[in-house]
Image (cartoon, rainbow, N blue to C red; front, side, top):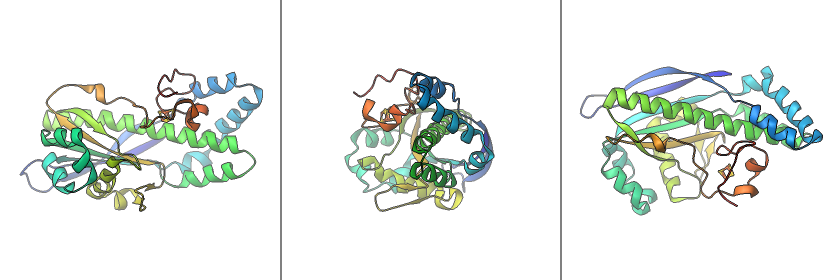
Length: 261
Ligand code: SF4
């Protein structure tokens, strides 16, 4: 599908200004097979909508509207800690604060598929083919998750090669929780507004909506188990629209989502 570019910035302790390079992160794609199987099981009418969505997904109109971009910034944990002084996450996030205090370095991740695809999602959701719009929404969320997986692999590789360190924890700030206080500092340090065209509102919702960020703490313990898809917190289980559409990033369509109720 789309190649995407990653701004990769690293700063060594006491070693002058940060270095910045851009990397092609490979091809980004989404396997529609599980979604197709899910809609086949839903009956003929639902499957017809899946086919319309699939045609749209493969069309140049849709492909060109997906504009992925990402940034990974490695910084000493001390610098992140200073930037987060007074933030809710550091004041109340006991485990995060403790881990940050004993971590030497962190990687800040930001990724987006841009805002143009949102116009198409809205157009379909507001028209006569709402299910096509919902499916496009679910598929783009899954695509965002695929980008996250590509970036996690890159962080793991670069952390080992640059610093001989491993990812030990990942914090994935969500709107409305104390960790949302991480969002603005992550975007500011990553210069994401300028590099990726992102913005936040008063509730710390990122615009374009199909954009996310996270903090990966790096340490000497080799434990890659943290870099796996984890459920949203809180998980709405079977009441979740993405679950019902077959677009949950954990269970995926046709998979076994065992979390939630
Ligand atoms: S089912 Fe849970 S984990 Fe999956 S998308 Fe919905 S809220 Fe997130």
